Length: 128
Image: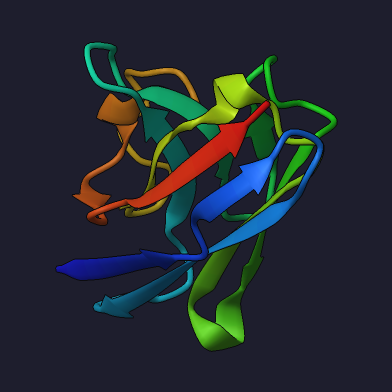
């Protein structure tokens, strides 16, 4: 089992920045896929960014590409999401997720179904 704890959410004005952190504990061998997802009430959870082992390939949703960066510190079992130039439409609960290896390959890189383990989320609110 892998436990994930997110932090770093908060309220910012449009154009501001936040850095989310996700610390993984439990069984982890630094070969997991890690992802960030977000959800607003009444909508499906959507993939924001994901990073995969074996070279650290990363994928981004079109809506955040160029503004968000996913990175990881294997020594600290931590994955980050640097969010710059935030927009009101980025307001959501942000969740960290993990999967062994490359996750369930039946699903696309940013599909939540690819991931097995989830944190409880951290709220991001962007005001205009």
